[in-house]
Image 1 (cartoon, one colour):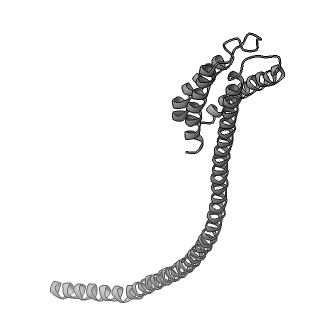
Image 2: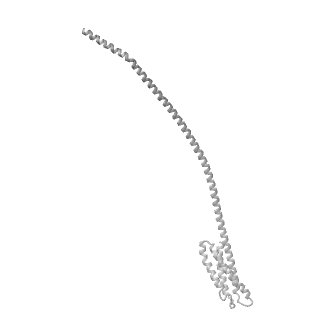
Image 3: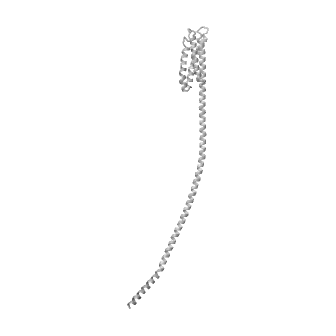
Length: 238
């Protein structure tokens, strides 16, 4: 009897456990279905977000590419415009500089030409005046004073002093127009001639009634004039 009771109890317990398992199985199925649905929703949301993100990224990339192409195009146009303007500016500046250079070189050239012409003209005038001084001085000193030629001698005395004064002034101008090396070479000779010729021509009772003819003085004046004419001509006609 006790064994039958125990067996019955065991069977009853197994039956109850089996009933509980059958009762609880739907709840587990329900919970699993809910979880699956939730996963599906999350997946759908993620997929939607990913799709939107990819679409947005594609739009951003497309916009960036368009902006980049526009920037490159603008840069090329600006470079072309700058190159054109730069080339035009350089051309204009080059033309202006060339014109200025030509003007200054031309001006310098003609200034040099004018200076040389002036120097040569002064040199020729100086040679002519030295020749006149020689002529009048020789004519004056080859004859002494007399009543008959007094007026002629007076005219010669005036001409000699006037010409000598002009020679002194023109010689100063002439020397200032020479180059430095030429001036250093010829300045002493010309100044020496001016001083010696004046002393020779106006010495020996010049402008007095006691003056006698002096061939030696006339010869000395001629020698001085010949020497300085040769020196001045070497500069003027070089």
